[in-house]
Image (tube, rainbow, N blue to C red; front, side):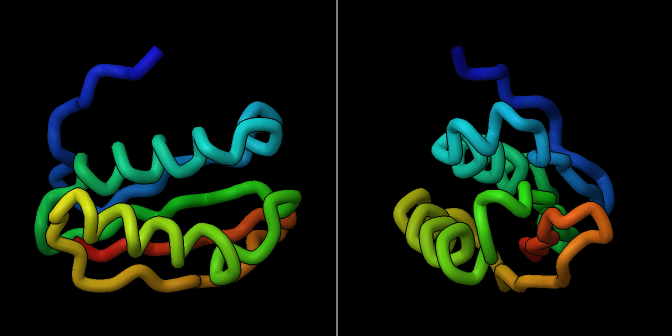
Length: 96
């Protein structure tokens, strides 16, 4: 079931997608990431924190998100890998 789209975020923010459910359903990581990007106001960014078990986001998340935002005609300035978290997850930043 799709969540209702919440109001736009006024500043920079993060969304934690490190739950075990996301490891089992990586397509949900993409869906939640797209929702988060849509909720991010122009001039701000959202950090997407993904499970380490899904691997390096530069190999799967960033290419897929880049194509998805283009297909959705979303204004995104940059999608950048930031770093691995101390817990083993990964942070990807999307600038609107």
